[in-house]
Image 1: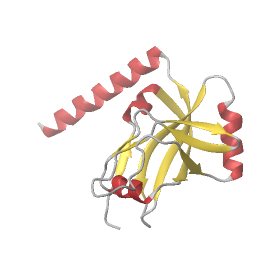
Image 2: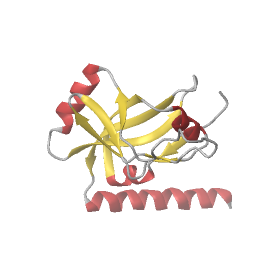
Image 3: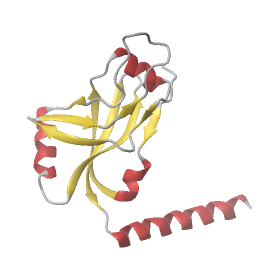
Length: 149
C-alpha cells in the first residue's frame, strides 16, 4: 500500500496532555474504508466511551462513499474499537479517575492496508498550559523563519 492516509485531531493536542497512547483497530463497513482511503473522514468532534468493557468511538464522521449505490453507510454511526482486554481494563481504570478522558488522536492506514485509530488517555490542560503551548509554537515558527532567511 502506497497510500499515506493520516487524519489528525489537531485540537486534541491543544486541549489535552496525553498520558498514554494506544493503537486500536476499528470495525468498519466496506464503503467506510473506501472513504477513509480517499481522506474523507474527520475526527475533530469524535470522542471515545467505554460501555460494557468495549471501547466505542462516537461522532467519528466518515463521509458517504461517492460511488456506492444503495448500500452506503451512515456517516456518524458508533464504531467499536478493537483492543486487548488488559488494555481496556487499564484504560477503564484510568478514565474513571477525575480529569481523565479517552481522546482519538489520529486515524491512519497501516502498511497492511488496515485502518487504525490512535487513542490516548489524556488530562485536560489548564488555561495557562494552553498559553504556554501557544508561546512554544510561536517560538518554533520564528526560528524556522530565521533559518529560511
